[in-house]
Image (tube, rainbow, N blue to C red; front, side, top):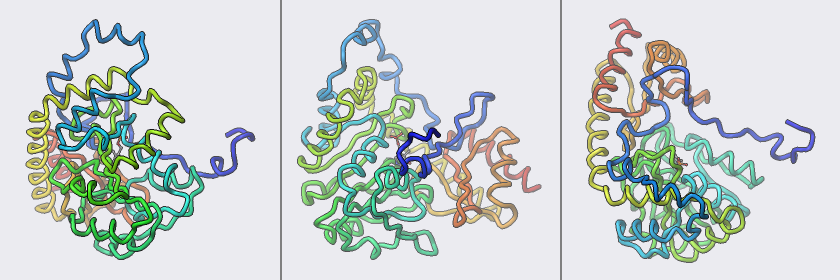
Length: 351
Ligand SMILES: *Cc1c(COP(=O)(O)O)cnc(C)c1O
């Protein structure tokens, strides 16, 4: 770093994304992408005419896309925000609502603490309980910015709609962000609560269930006033945050919703297969509602298992963080990938 860098940025830790190796073809089970391609509508969506439109700025209001999402989820387009990946919405939320303090779990999505440091926000980390479930009471009455991934990452565990509502009710003077990056894999959404509470922001992404991680598209639902806050930040940083090709492909994906729902069902099935197989091998596997499993074995450390799998061409995620160092996180791929994964684990354990 240069000597010119602002001190808080100089001393903070940037987010470290999962590996995206370009050297060899791994079975890639490390960053929770979909094993399935985007739908045919998306894959065939880029006509010559669409590409020629790159000459023009994109629609800063993202009207077509917002309308599609509003119709699909049964809300008004005034309740919808779209962004360059959902990380951008999280970024905006920390910027907009964090000054009175931010509250999130110790084991959760790694970006929350990065935004908190980036903006120098007073931060309270609320450790998960021993069994990795959320310490619900720890989030009551905070009246700052509460951020909860539901289902949580990397555990895959979820809290119920009632439990979410209790947290929202007890924080009437703070915004509660529910990050639903993984909700499509069998989780429960807080979306029905946005009309009832003016302090709820529900954040979603195209990166996981809609097979579009590389297109960078996130969306959020909330009361109209919260959406206006986010729009204000967007127009103060990057009015054209969602490029025209991504807006188009995002709309086309909504037209193919059934395809994505079928894919989610396949992932849920493969998740069950993988969990059963790992349990047969003596693993402890958390009860996941996401497109990944969080698992550990008494027979091998998380790091050793991660490295041995990588050696055999299978990439999973290992977090060098004390409380979860024994675990690996395995993205659920297609049937064949999961069979290979299990075979490799057996080889490594010598079974
Ligand atoms: C993957 C992920 C995101 C980020 O998704 P993008 O839309 O790709 O930025 C946000 N929150 C959680 C919990 C995630 O796992």
